Image 1 (cartoon, rainbow, N blue to C red):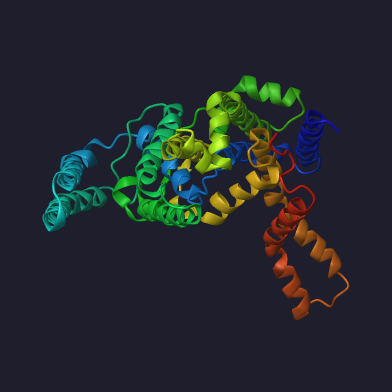
Image 2 (cartoon, rainbow, N blue to C red):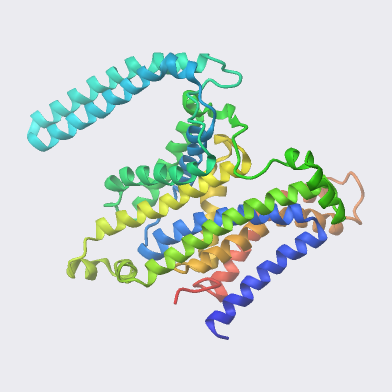
Length: 433
């Protein structure tokens, strides 16, 4: 079987799964799974850039994804002039003091030596910290006390939500640059530990800094780039058209909205895959794979390995941030409490490994397949266990234990799939060429 034919057949099989879902359950369900699968494919594409191109083991994906999700809050949510007036100037002053203290400490590091260097750096950082807290704490308190039940944060700019998508990528890329300048000199296993910790720090900050995005109280009612279902249902022309198709207007409006989202997400994904393929086949892409395979040889040929790793780290993290902004747009709300490493790191890595590390189309295939199974395996497991225990007496402790275990079918199935793929196709379903 040729490589292209194998890819066509595998994508066809995944498409068939979605068609079956639409026919047997509902098209709302199928499109809902598809939309999140497309967003996951963008995250997997970013991880594939880092790992498949450069061998960078980033397991802090959830942090960059969450940071991208902050962008729609700051860009698209309604402005809060009275809240900004209460604490905005002091917030700006606090961050200016922090930046100035850091810059002076860096300058002192480069200009001094020995004990004087240590003393000056500690002096500037301690003074900067106390100056920052003296301005920041009153500002944050003032912001959080205003309309705390519905706002209590600095609000946004009220701009179109589509503008927040590239801003989310910029947020994640900026964080990746700062992290990469420090951590990319570490060996791969230490880099993994560092990114894991940094990802959790980012999520913890978003959960606890209420002045920024309400923390765990969540930001709801974010604008969307597609029509609202209630507006479609209020349109006589849409209702007449849906009725003519034999559809309930409520169901038809939900399907149309999901189709609009799917079109947007698919267009973004295809553009990104096209750009990634161009990069992979370019001299830059060949150089990156050469660095991945043998860093020592690449350095001997004059390549700046750390700088190239930083490029990949920034690009991959930017895609994670872009996907994070898209996910918040799809949900219409920003919920920091839902960002956990299992969903937004482990599952993404599973998608890349099963699809085929180093293959962009493999990352897309793995994302769609794994997300479909991630959603469907739990109800399938419950049905299977209900059938298997149908002969047992009601009230049996063993029967109840088995039925309660259905929730764990998802994790067990993912592990079994990973083992099978690693055994029979260790380079993934669509291996790197």
